[in-house]
Length: 193
Image 1 (cartoon, helix red, strand yellow):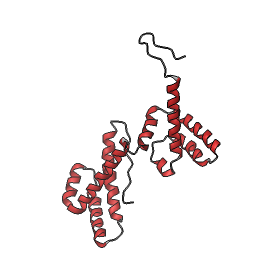
Image 2 (cartoon, rainbow, N blue to C red):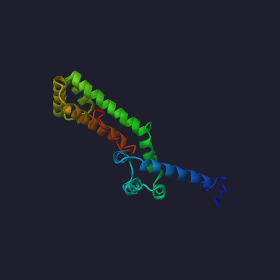
Image 3 (spheres, rainbow, N blue to C red):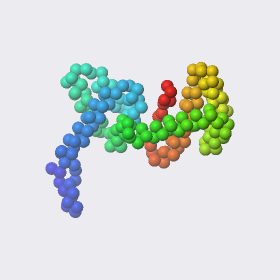
Image 4 (tube, rainbow, N blue to C red):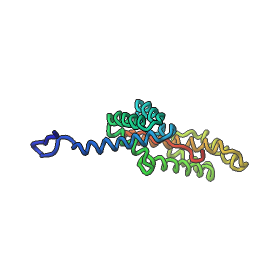
């Protein structure tokens, strides 16, 4: 019996139908997680104690056994806080906030890399003015080497390393801003890899 609050008339707990909808929603999320490969799972904010259950669900091929394991995984996931499940859903959602932040970070790093290659020390001065913690010498060396690689049509080792260096610099700045929000920084990868 749900019961009602005598003062407000509101129900004290969600209805059985609402509880079932929420449980089915978590089951669908569990099925989605079981369908991902290890690399995709590693990028999601999944608590460590759920990884073995997901791996087991991925390993099982028998229909009934897999269904049972997915139900068990969903049961374990329902014990998590709503914020944890929302963070996983957001990370899975290609149009989610985490994906937008990651894409914006990648674009900023790419723009800085192109500016450093095109404008040289002028762009480096602007970057250092915005990010005083940056390693001037390392960025200058990487930009110079990337330009030489491009001119000689060599493999883009320094070009990629420059991107990684810029991405880490921008991500650390972004992490400092987000610590007040309590959100972790987005993990990003070089689109050239």
